[in-house]
Image (tube, rainbow, N blue to C red; front, side, top):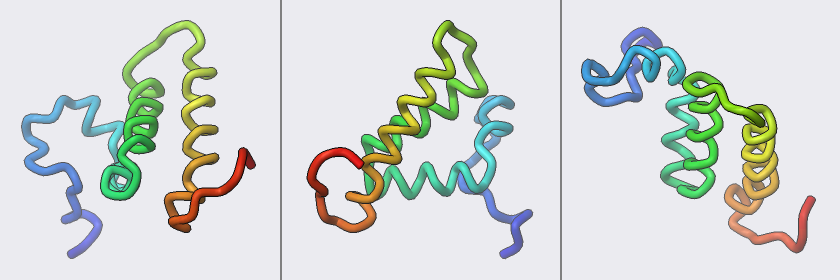
Amino acid sequence: MTLEDYNPLPDASHVPILEKTCWTPARAELRAWLQRNAPSLAELYEGAVRLMYENSLPGQVRFISHAVREIRNRLPDVISGIKGEGQL
């Protein structure tokens, strides 16, 4: 399988053009990994990506920054399987 053959979005023919452009193979793969391993972080990740590409609203950068910070703070627990004490 080559990179050109790789399509992480099943049956992408019904997916809107914007969805196809913002969900690169790397982003879709990360989203799928998060959905399997940390569904709540997957929601934050998907929301942040969609805010970057689909919407324009007051405080947009701050909302995305908060999502990134939350993912960053909780990802070590997901990867290690051990819940840390307090914030990093």
